[in-house]
Structure formats: structure tokens, C-alpha cells
Image 1 (cartoon, each protein chain N blue to C red):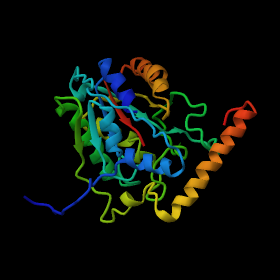
Image 2 (image 1 turned 180 degrees about the vertical axis):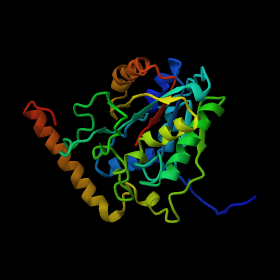
Image 3 (image 1 turned 90 degrees about the horizontal axis):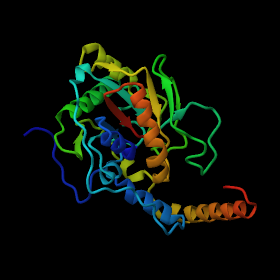
Image 4 (image 1 turned 90 degrees about the vertical axis):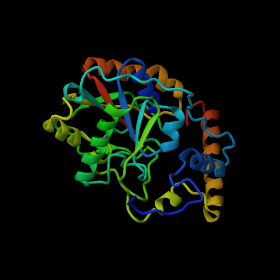
Length: 171
Length: 122
């Protein structure tokens, strides 16, 4: 065996469920957010080789805007949205999402929406094609809205784009 | 986003989620999950690190082909760096911050109550 070994007494990855619960409890919110949990998960199989497949990219970011979002309104007026991959966006709006604003930044769109990285793999023949537009799905406290509105709308757009597979990247 | 992935899978579109919030994605349950053990914000690789970003998308495509069961999680072999203190700091409630957080929560609830009384939305 190679590689460095070490020891631990705790999970080595962050439990964001625990962290958010404790963070909001400290603010006096005594009813913790109930995260979605399922006993099983659907699995679709590839219908054709990757090299012949068209791929969709999906992000939780929003179109770039200079003005800050309304504080405390994660959803605000956000909807499923789409934009061309060419030219790729140079910035996307992420200030309203929960990511580690101390440890990193989101000024490099490729760090969360890998348009150029997928295009490079299209050029090598690893994957067939990238759909001409990418999609954005709002992060929502309401799982019902995600399930009843946003997911079906994204599916509709995926069919419209005739994609075979989807790569989804939540921030 | 995991709920959206499940919806696409149920309709026959294979998906892979690339993310850094492992417990949230795994509890929800998706078909294929590539876990980047990085601070939230850059699941596809450190900013401007093109070779790393390229590698991560490559791992995601490998996973699309290799998973035979749903809830397949693969962790990338990539590390954010030697300093992992971000894991301790993110949204951590330390004793000095506790009082400020409690007051912030109270202020927000009071503002929401006032907004409701006015008939508007907070």
C-alpha cells in the first residue's frame, strides 16, 4: 500500500446537516430543517456509449447580477433558467447560496460549471457532445416546489435539448 | 439538486452529481455521486486549476459508465491542500459567536413578525 495514513476519532468530511442544524439552533430556531431522505434511488442506464452521448450541464447558480439578492430570500423570484455555453458565462451569481465564503470564491465559473472541461473531453472523443445551453435550478427550502415545478421543467428542457445524460453540480 | 437528479433518473436520463456536501446528497439518495472533499463552492476543482477541473469531470464520466447500483458514491483522490482548517470553521458556532448569532436570529424573527403585521412578505 502506498499513500499517507492517519488516524481519526470523527468523520473526516463535514456533516453539513449537523452544521446547519447547530448554526440555526444557535440563532434560536428550534425546528431544524428536514432534509430530504429516501430509502432507495432510481438508476437509469446509459442508452448509448458515452462517446455518442450528448450531455447537459446543470448548476444551482443564477445569472450574473451586480445587485445583491434580497437578504433572507433564497428563492426570491428564481426559476429554472438556461443560457448558451458559447460564449461561456464569465461570472454567475452565487452570493445567495451557502458555500464557504471564507475558504474560497466562485469567480472562476469552471470551478462549479465545467463547460470548458467537458468541451475538452468532447474533443478527445470521450463524450459525444455538450448541449448548446446549460441550465440553472434554484436551491429551494421547499422540496415540494423543487419536485413539482423545477425538476419537471428541467426534464422538459433536457428533452428539448435531446440530451442523453446530465451532469449536475450543486454549489 | 439531488431531488432533480432523481427526477431525471426516474424518467430514464442517467445523471451524475458532483458535489461537496456528502451527507446531504447521500441522505437524499442519488444514482451516482462524485464527492469532492473541498470547501463548498468549487466541487469541480479549485479556481483556475484547469488540470484538476479536467480530472474531476473525467472521474464523473467514468462513474456514469461504471456504476451498477444506485447510490454509488466515488470520492475523488484530490485534496484541497494540507490545511484542512476550513472543515472546522464552516458555520461553526463557537462560544464567542453564540451570543451574536442568538441576537441576529431574534432580530430576524422580529423583522419577519413586523412584515407580517404589515401584510407584506419578509
